[in-house]
Image 1 (cartoon, rainbow, N blue to C red):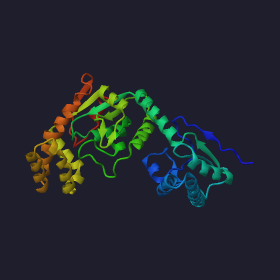
Image 2: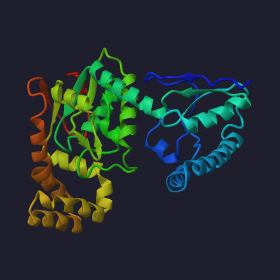
Image 3: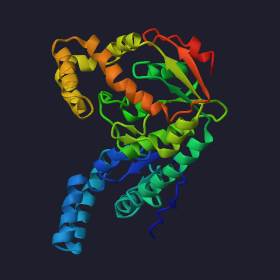
Image 4: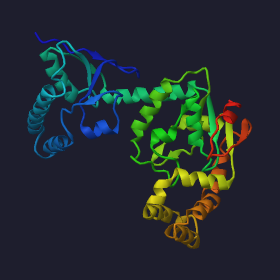
Length: 342
């Protein structure tokens, strides 16, 4: 008699042990339950093939082809990724909705003698639970904002706070972007779903008996969107405003963005996008400085003409009553002044 495969509906908490994502490689890359390994029942190309058969030939022929491909893939996973597991090994298996793809894999694993459990609702249910939990965690924590104009070294200050044992959420680190026109970080950005999942799981680990520091950000971080409840907290929380001269900020940015100096054509391409906001004469002057490798006047002028007005506009949304000002030099970060007012 065949054993029934147990099912479980997770409530936003991570399962323990081996987690198997039976979706295709692109679905897995977009987002997945943390710690899950990807053992596709059908890969991306096979899903397209089966879907085309379903639409253009018949559902019956699509199911035949899908079964053949799935059987081959499952056999390969058993011979490779799962070959060293002992009998009775427990595991979680899921796909998009907890249906055919995860069910097919779990059925074979169950017959072998493993103990797979299907996650009811699959990734779709997990995603729903994460989004509910994200709102709950944002509301639970006591937020404190670190603000300051471009080049004031806010991310560096956040890192110093974290090293000192403070609770910190680095949105730019999670999102792979520094929050400006020139903010792309090598490696690119995650998907919106993965960004939100990583944010949720980081918030779950933070205590609620101490402030959580976050950098002031606009709603968009590159091509990602910061969750609206968190933006509300950023706008309303008490904050510390970093103050430093434009000369200090220019020096700091020249140290902190060497990749743009090393790739002048890429920098020119990015600045060309600003012709809609600045005159051709201004943008032409910026390009001239790049071609002449005169980066100090370039950065100084970009700060005064572009970044500082944008920052002053965004400042209107931040808390103007619960704010303390801290004069520092971003090129020589010393934590003592910041810790003295935490």
